[in-house]
Image (tube, rainbow, N blue to C red; front, side, top):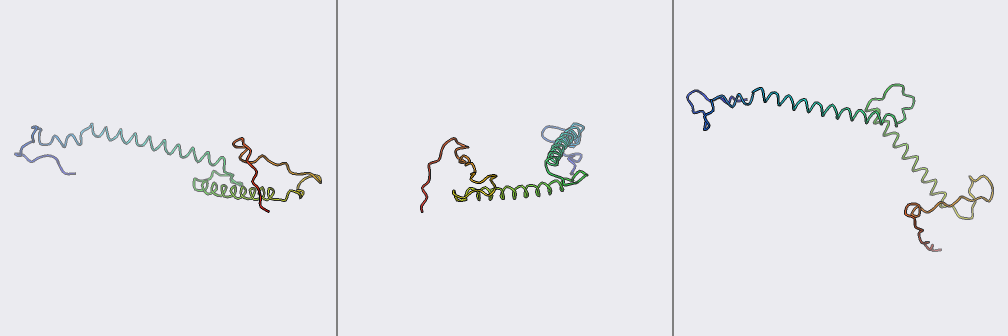
Length: 144
């Protein structure tokens, strides 16, 4: 940092301040206290941020299966397990949806192989739009 003091014999400035007054202002105790307060505030914000992040990881660890792990998973391991778990759940949902679509697309006259007694039929679920919005869709004529 350059010195703000002016050499002896040069004019002090328009306000008549002593030659080194600017340097005293920049390094005075008020400036140091202000910097220390800002640093303490920044440290407190960072501490709260990290506590929030750690709380979020703890919550994630509670919902992600650990598959026999007896030690606490690291943050990286927790994210890897969460990703694997999400992929597995997505596959299960996709398979269940395919099965459901397969059941819905069976011919009407055919009995369902999973029913417990002959002649029984699956109960028709309410159409999706009716369940959500409370209206009955108009039948769509199928071309033969």
